[in-house]
Length: 239
Image 1 (tube, rainbow, N blue to C red):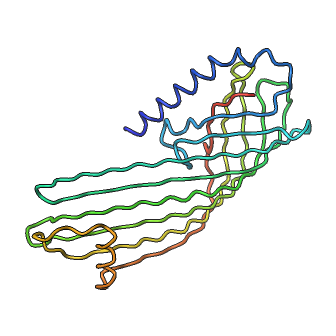
Image 2 (image 1 turned 120 degrees about the vertical axis):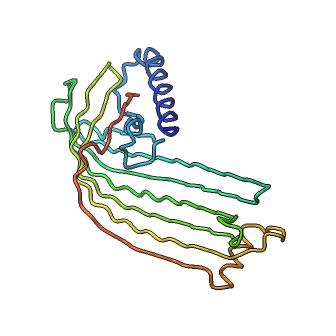
Image 3 (image 1 turned 45 degrees about the vertical axis):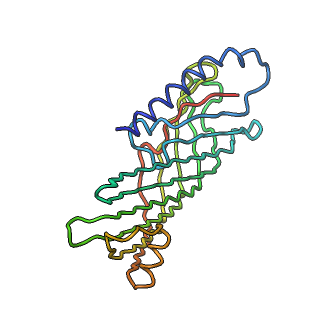
């Protein structure tokens, strides 16, 4: 719920800014080659890519082709510390994505409603780090660390519709046939500690766990093909 509030706030700020700035650009006689926008699917928690992302497209001449790209990033940190009980619960996530592709207009370029096809390549890795130091009961005080790495590669074949709201503002909605390769690996560390001793830094605890053979790892990879009815939903602005 907190993430959705942040996404809604970002969307409102972007939308108001674009509407406010529209008169500043409307005087120009230059043909519009650039289109920039932001994701709306984060408002519904349905996006494949990180919530905070920027979309950009540039026309390639007058033949209906455009180059396009999308960059996204997201991160959060959660930490709960109870010094009296010597319990520390720490979780971090870093999310990144990059997409690049080509689209082709397949309808009248002068129409307010335009249809197009596109092909995109995307790379979207993320990493989560979880650490827990403490005890679930009085007999088991120790350190546990879990590192998860996920690397995803996409090829999307899309069909989309672009609806003009004003002369510069538009909405884009796409559906895609998506091929995805996902590689996942997890590394865990665990070591028992004496609650009466000074707690070493996290890196030293991980080295202690590895030296005492309390390190584990798990890996897997998968490939799948699926239809994504709403792969992108964007609000965009012509520059």
